[in-house]
Image 1 (cartoon, rainbow, N blue to C red):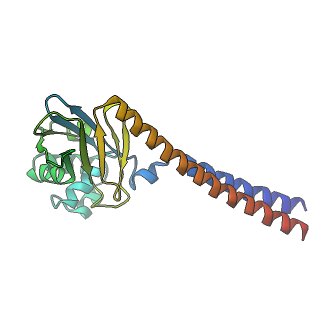
Image 2: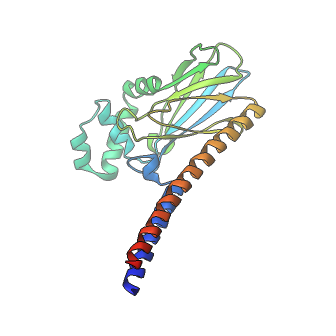
Image 3: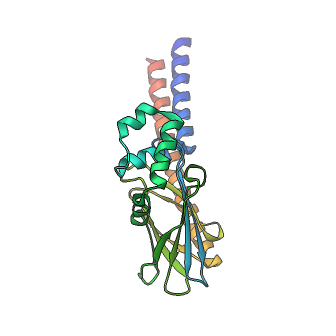
Length: 228
């Protein structure tokens, strides 16, 4: 009997641990090779300029990108390993126009009217430590802009990009969520934050319900085994 109770307790503990993993955001959920990449989005509404600062979460993402766009050989990068490969591949990216072409293909800014904003990749000095900054010039003053981000998801669909914008707005870009509307209005930004929080809460509650049901099932099965 004590052994059965011990096994039942261990099984319940495993279910509780699984629930904890569900609720606690793991880097692996956000990025297959480490912490997630980030973008910060700044809207200079009067000037009609959108500034985007991109930075991968893991330094070796530069190696994956360099190999992905054909600048380096993936096997050679893995063989060199560590900081040697990262520095070499980052240097290759910095000196190549392919980096700018890749970024302007995977970061697209449009006005709310649908008009595209003209991109410029600013000069890169320290790629690994500082990332890359882009500026998008739009035709006129901005209220809302649609920003499309699909960086690195062509290399692996599990990549995500954690984005921050004006007035505390946040969004997680992914392979299936590549576009988001950002607002210059504090009121609309508050509404967007509230909607985002509601979606996150509903996801957590659904996870709780699912994990709670799984834990209850484990307990019922454990009791049946104990009684038998």
